[in-house]
Length: 144
Image (cartoon, rainbow, N blue to C red):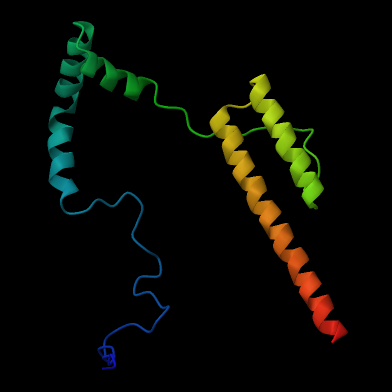
């Protein structure tokens, strides 16, 4: 039995065309958030003071809340490894991987940063291999 597709309703937008090209304005809150934000606005200062008081009395959960707001977890940072070789070929990618490994070992970058950089280089290596295979296939087909 074959699946029959229903035609789109006459008021539907064509595929690939948005009904709102400008998109939702930044900072717009959904209907559920609005009353919550209004309540928080009325009591935010009192709640914050209570959490701080609890933290000062040794409540570890309150301490965690305060510290997360005062000193949030660090985000990504730019990494400068000036001596990385060119990655225009697989040998360069391999050398760059070695330099990243050394930078992690020396503490110049964190292991998670090194892992991210290595993932980027792995994607580059795969792209180079794909391009090389395409050239080989094209050359073989041309010889026929």
